[in-house]
Amino acid sequence: MIEIENVRKSFGPLEVLKGVSLAVQKGEVLSIIGGSGSGKSTLLMCINGLEPIQGGRILVDGTDVHAPGTDLNRLRRRIGIVFQQWNAFPHLTVLENVMLAPRKVLGKGRREAEEIAAKNLRHVGLGEKLSVYPSKLSGGQQQRMAIARALAMSPDYMLFDEVTSALDPQLVGEVLDTLRMLSDEGMTMILVTHEIRFARDVSDRVAFFHKGVIHEIGPAREVIGNPQMPETIDFLKSVL
Amino acid sequence: MLETNLGWNDILFMLKGAGVTLSITAWAMLGGTILGMAFGLARTTLPWWLNAPLGAVLDVLRSVPLLIQFVLANSFKSIIGVNASAFTVACVMLSLYTASYCSEIVRGGILAVPATTRRAARSLGMTYRQDLAHIVFPMALRVALPNWIGLVLSVMKDTALVLWIGIVELLRASQIVVTRLQEPLLVLSVAGLIYFLMSFPVARLGARLEKRWHEND
Image (tube, rainbow over all chains, first blue to last red; front, side, top):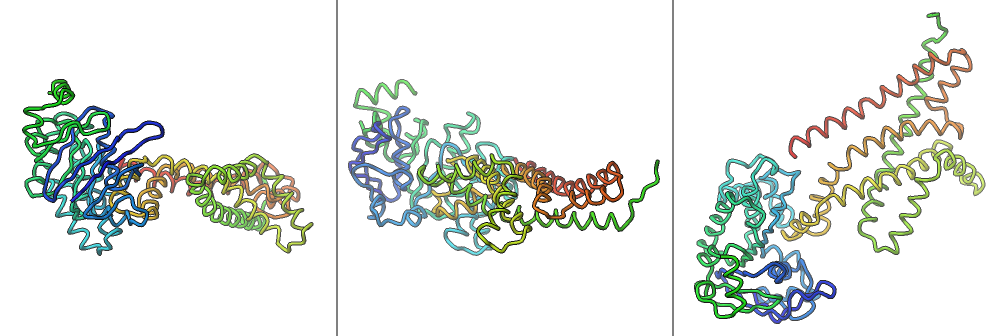
């Protein structure tokens, strides 16, 4: 379970999260929607400690992420994150990209890491591309590789930060299909996304972020189909 | 016109000098690269109050002509009574000089690795060191290699300046032969050819590595 309690986060004088509280249960899929600069992506970085926070706290299965004694490297093994820019390691093959963390972080042997990597790559439909370098892949394939790379750590949670925003429109579908597959398998996921219809179809709940606070949160169909707050209504009008 | 007094013994003498040139180059590149990597990494991570003085020292090493550095270091060595050979002084000074250039090459390579890629590595649970070893250094190497190869070639030619502190390397050996035979054009051509034969494989090796890596880009 991920518990976010009254989190405040600033970049210098700019406060991007102004007291955000949220809980995500095991097995739940939560989508976060909202305009650019509303703090959605920042929240994801705070959850796995890539960004420090200035107030409140975040608990992942009871571990306080930002407490001084927390071993973030250990915590991050349990929380996969995929970014808007897929961030392939360009000097490694697709298989090596996915093997690296299981080998170095989890200490798996070469053979076992290879098996884990190949299994996860086949799972996202890249079984034919194992020995290829990322530069030879399309954006959608690179993004699926990034998903397999995160999955290879067998995380309990997956965070997705606008993973389709940098893709050509015709490549968005294949990545969304992969996300849908993960959600069907029961993966606990937080998705920051601009794909409103996808969010409605795949998520249990949707949270609408606006100016650093959650304006509305609830079951996906209600928030998107029947929004209550004027800000949510305006936002949905502008994007749908 | 084509008659010459340049004999095998002279060429052998020059090749011995070339051996000294290669040896100094190798030591300077070894020391300079290790130090350069340390300094280059330090310059991307240290706080400014440590970074600024380090940068200043490296700037001095880069800005003062190497010849002056050799002569000063060699004299200073005698003044403070350190018992080091001219060869050692040459290797140490050339290492520092190489390190000052190498640190900039390394720094540029490290800064060329996108912060987002490093963040992706850390998000997988990799430690700072693992990120450096498995992501940053290999990626930086690809950016830095062409410049590093250029540095090797440049240092190899800079070794000629050590003749001023009494070391007989290729150029000094050639001068000695010229003085004896009075055939400067031929002897210097042979010396130039030897320099070329030493440099060419390095340049080729660099080009091959670059080509191999670029096939994946």
